[in-house]
Length: 310
Image (tube, rainbow, N blue to C red; front, side, top):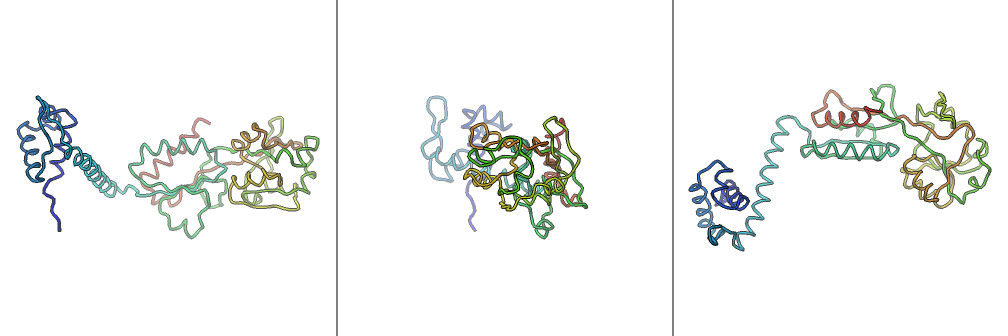
């Protein structure tokens, strides 16, 4: 097995001499004597067989070979620190990875704020983000997973986060956009409806009138009254937009995504009699809470804090 001639501490001393501009300042920063630093660097040069520093005037400067080796030594120091940090994490049961399922209907600016805040406290935890629902069998295998979702089971303990607004849209050239607005529900019946999920599986969705009144009836009851002869189900909103942009069908689209396309006159917001938009409740679920580690608790608190003032 190979044994290094130069120790990690010697490389750190060389780095300090360069970073602090000389032996005197480096000795003070490292709380060592100047003579011990001189001896360490001299021994390094002897062990490696090449000069690393040369004195120019009163200042020690790196040689060309010294610059090359110093650059590589910084990588060595960083990796050593990373290994020790990982050991500390393992000792404190800090998770090496977390899984976050986040439905696409969750407002993107909230997700980005959450990720930015978590990055500062993650301590190297790998975060796996998915916009597709885990299978039940796979979810059971994940000891550290959180869900931001609109789909909750009766057994799940879910924390309400926010409501996502959905607007009814189609392409500007679509037949529905040419009809007098607002539309009656039966005028949608003969047209193709595009959906990301089967909406009759969702619960708690409410329709909001143009006067701001929120109706108490749930999404299945409401959408069952808007029966389309043909329904296409896609797995993401970007695919939905691509289909809408071809002039095919109509859809309920999340407001942040719909608004930009409406303002650019790509899509047309349909006006539906008695309903300006839908509200879809979004929840946070922590799976395997009994096994929840510190990184998962931090991520949970960040998500909840994101919506604490709403």
